[in-house]
Every structure is written in structure tokens, then in C-alpha cells.
Length: 259
Image (tube, rainbow, N blue to C red; front, side):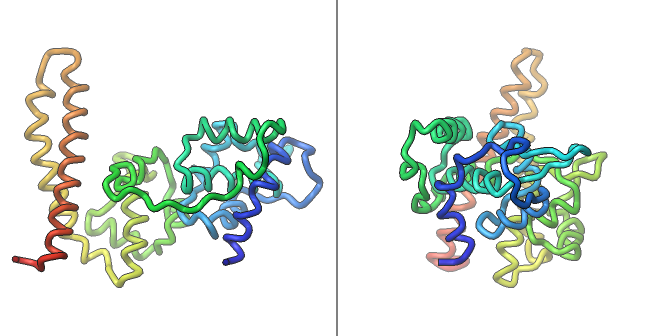
């Protein structure tokens, strides 16, 4: 068992101790960047935006300095580990996780019930897994590099080959760019480089054009619900094409190309 995993296993004991309010602990505190470095040992996909979002949802409340900088205690880090573990290992929504933490804080649940659980493999057919849950983020270039482990040179190549780009008219990257960079980071471990992924981008362009052709008549409808229906059609066809691509790819791997 790695040191990082052992740390994750101690979450249930530490999580209920504090919600991170001012004065909760006199121990050394951490900046949000230092917290990110610690969490990424067990949760490589966690980002600064994710940590801020969990704070906005009330799952952790770090102390603030007089200059309004966040200062995280060890209890805050433990709570974040617990939330991330519950999401990844038990697929719980934040609402349920927050209820569990609240109950644990008040002593209404035994600690064993909130202990670490076995990691279950994600369903290979789930679109939210394939699409990285459509995570809503707004990341700077620096944050994207830190969150994915992609180098500046690799990111520049991904942009060069049209695999990802900042949001139009801005310098920030969204959840789709994050998903592409994360996926490339995993593929790069097998020696795959950005230039090898150009066929994937070309195929995506062609399929996007096909989907737009189908949805175009709906966009032109005067019915006030026409636009919403078009978006539903876009999502539905995109999901079906992803399933088709996965099935064809699996078939080719089993039978051999051109069989």
C-alpha cells in the first residue's frame, strides 16, 4: 500500500473534526496550491477549480487570512479526501456526501460507515465516464497544465493539431479541453503523441458536421421549444455515435483491421 493510499484510508477518522473555520486548529496551515499537491497523490485529476467548487458547495470551509487568502488545516484536507473518495469509489452525489459529513460531525453515524470503500471500475458504457462528466470548469493555461501533467510543449502541439483550444474570444479552457488533455496524458504513457491523434480530430469534425445537418431543421423552427429540441438531438446523436465508435473499435481489435 502506498503512502498516499494509506493517507486516504485515514480520512474517516479525521474528516469530522472540523469544517475548517477560523481558529479550528493551531497546526500548520496550507495554501490551496499545497493542498492540490497533496490531493493529487491519490486523485490525479483534481484541480484548483474543483477544490474551490467544493468550498462553494459548503463541503469544506477553510480559514481566511486578513488578506482573504485561503488557509487549509489538516482537517480540511481530510474532508476533501473524503469527498473525492466518496465520489470516485462510491459514485455519490455531493448532496449525499454533505449529508454524511453533517451526520458524522454530529455523531449520528458510526465512523466505520464512512470508511474507505473498494474502488469499483467505471461502467465502460456510461457517457458521463466517457465524456469526463462534462465538467464545468474555467481554467487558465497554468491550471490546465498543473491539473493534467501535460507539458507546455505537448499542450502547444495539442493546440497545433486542433485537438483543444481556449474558449473563443478568451484565454481560458473549459471542461472539454480538460477532458482532452487528461485523455492525452493517459495515452502519452503508451508513446502516443499529439500528431498521432489527428485522425480522431478529423473524425470528430466529420461527425459534428453530420449531427449539425440533422439538427439544422430543428434550429430553424419557429416553435419556441425548437432550439431546446435541437440541443437534445445533438446530445442524443453524439452519444449514439460514441457508442458506435466504441463498438467498431472493439470489433476491429477482436477481428483485426480490414477483416
